[in-house]
Length: 257
Ligand code: NAD
Image (tube, rainbow, N blue to C red; front, side, top):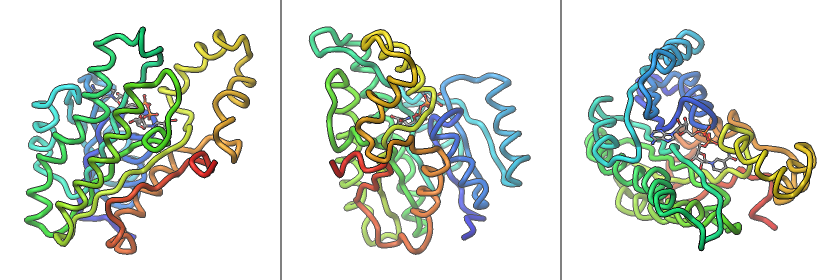
């Protein structure tokens, strides 16, 4: 399947799942805009390297997804898009009583509100062209909960709700909106949690991975960024024209338990 002639924006895509999705979209021929909140030489080099690797045009556009104006400016600077992947996300783990207010606000802004602002900016162009895909990266935590992740779980459930509303408003206009719900994928956001879990459980790295993290993932394996990219590319295919307003779990069976 070729995505040549389609422009994709992937938010928060200088690492992890976002970068994996950007790579698979570029390999399928899409013009891709990658994004993060920084504006370094390394960010622009990453875009150039991805372009060289895939043969697709790839640009880096700086925008801070915690800021509504930046979210909308990202879509404007890209000159609109046919495929919008709302991926940027952060995590913080603490009991509700101890959860810092600024962390709550940042998680809700980056993981949930940014998807609203970019979608609001992108839809009109998609409607005009009669084709579009909004792909929200939610989580198994958009469908289930874990203790100590109040802001993350609340934001990801919100993303699933936003996905359904976007799908209903876009229905009949050639535009679909779906959420991908990954289980654990070994990316920087997960790597950062391993030392804390080792300390909290007094376990070594391998035991934490096997008995704490992957205990919820019946397959016993991490999902991969390539699998997230492949799922996103599938959602862009004509086979997915009538798939809208739904969640696709890529979680090794987590939500089947
Ligand atoms: P990651 O930390 O590798 O990637 C997060 C990306 O978001 C980074 O590129 C970072 O630069 C960017 N980002 C952070 N704050 C930003 C901001 N203010 N503005 C713009 N960009 C910003 O983590 P990841 O695992 O690749 O996570 C990507 C998405 O997948 C997140 O929404 C996360 O919640 C979701 N997810 C991850 C897992 C997992 O196991 N890794 C599981 C389920 C869902």
